[in-house]
Image (tube, rainbow, N blue to C red; front, side):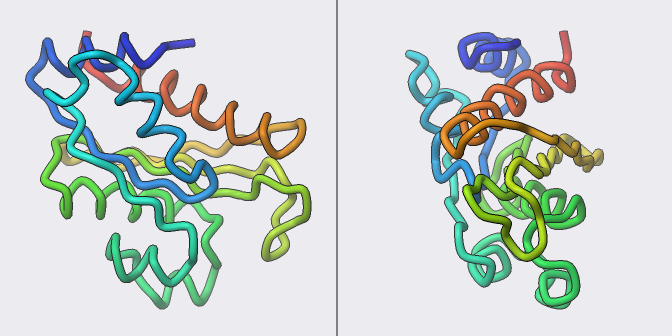
Length: 155
């Protein structure tokens, strides 16, 4: 697993900036990044768009897409990542959306999570099926976000 310090170091080495859009993690991912000394050189900021309508209003996620599929979907994660990258003026956008539980959300079981990444002209998503309680799902989402991001960054 990559840690936040590795991410900050890689971003700094390559002169890249990052912005984060979060739903189920509620700010935990950006908090992890900014816990690293010197993070202000590369972290532009974060948007917690917990409510579905805020994903459209703040991040530019297509309202028709949200109406059709809800907030837990790979296309939503990708649009969140691209939207936060654009709106916060960063090189990289990362997004988290999913169901943390304890109850299903819009027909999605707790632990169904989508991560979105917008790096340069590449936009992608990764689906996760996580177990455990709400805290474990949220914590594992942060860990997985950092690990997957590290794989996408230049060496």
